[in-house]
Length: 182
Image (cartoon, rainbow, N blue to C red; front, side):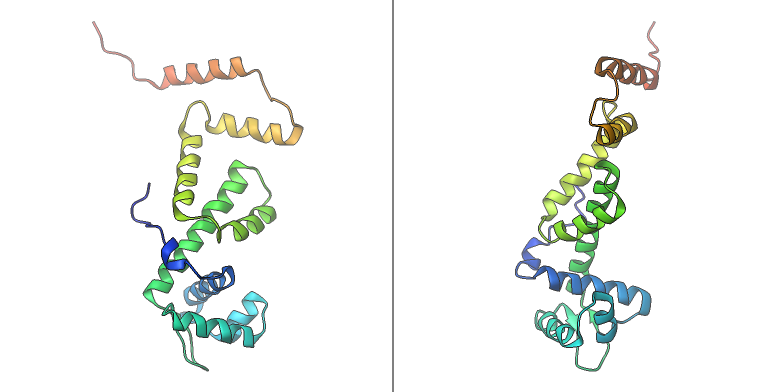
């Protein structure tokens, strides 16, 4: 597990999905504009300015943003860490949905948005390791992914499993360095 990314679940406890989304939007606006403004946040989220003001007050009270009325908004260090954690969760989930589960981008995006708020950091990191395993294990790898795609499209096995296993074993033997025995 990536030890650099520690679980944030305790810090985010009590934050609604909506407030988590505000942190992400503020982060993205800071990245593109150096600061966020209430109007930009409202436009990006498709909400009214009074809703933004209420959310900003809550986030400021929790010391997750620097905010005062009619001024620019920036994330605090802790707010930035939480935003990055949710951005990481979203990216991992979306990648899993598109590459492993073969969902189209729109469905992957919608589901990632929903699940990123409910899944904890430990489950996200386990998902990352699962995808790494699928990509590296000779019993899975690209052949497995392609077979799964065909299965999703047609609902049937794409090939003879015994033949597939034989191919995997042959590939492993080809990849192993030749022994230097006498």
